[in-house]
Length: 371
Image (cartoon, rainbow, N blue to C red; front, side, top):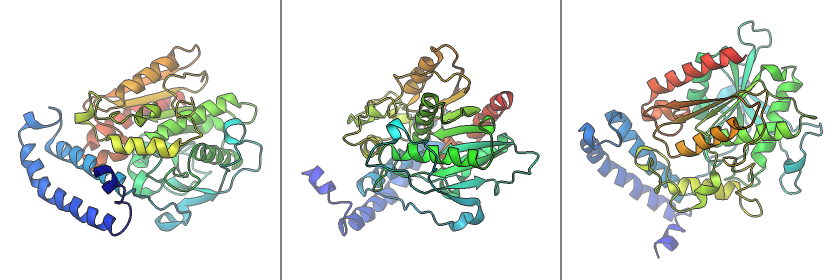
């Protein structure tokens, strides 16, 4: 009965009623959460500040609300607030969409991307590297624009001498956005950088959460098609979602040892994988769930970061160990103590700015030695 009622929530007037009730619930519970978390002993983790404990709880509630109303962010190619920093990118005319990217249903389309910190200037003598970044959001939320990626992009530009090119790839929550749409878009964005004369040796690919999953899929595709695409200089993985197939199970988050300290919830990740890899896509495909499918990535150093207190921690470690087991691969595994999932994307919102800055500084030091 309850499930049938919730199935009506995405539709009006039930959506409005649900939202009013949900925010009324938050208004009532917020002071209680605040008082409850005043004693450090009652917080999710002893290291959490009052703000962090409160915001981790609020993030879970808001994510659940997004699931029940089936929130679909608008996917737009208009310049918007980014103005000249936003670029529209047409699919490449070269034969670069092969194999897993050549299916009859999902075709390459025009996409967009935003430059940080300013519009790209090839004459800039300071910034010689381009970080091609894919945002997180379980393939159903997010964008490469400032409202979503602005904080993460600022971490990258503050700790590296690099431009950031944040890709607005297709979301699985929109029509035609299921796998391999995002991977096609990643290849399109990479080729566009090559076409403008930026050498592959100056490009670093990067992604957080689902964007980390996309980055891994991109690296797999490149290493399987070296005859058409050159290797990027390095790759940065931030809290990468390396085992989405597990998220199809009802308690993939709530049954995890780090559920209490993290922001992820069952409904959100299950929605993400079912949208990204619906039938006939196999969620166990190495391109979708790479944790147990290491591959040779020689010549592309990997920075693999995760939070000690996040649900994905064990999966990320297992993925990194698998990649390290292959001769020629170079993997730097970086654990951030006392942090939940994806402070790269949300650190400024949930109160982990200081730890996010230290994390980015460590990455910057590592990357400087590679480029």
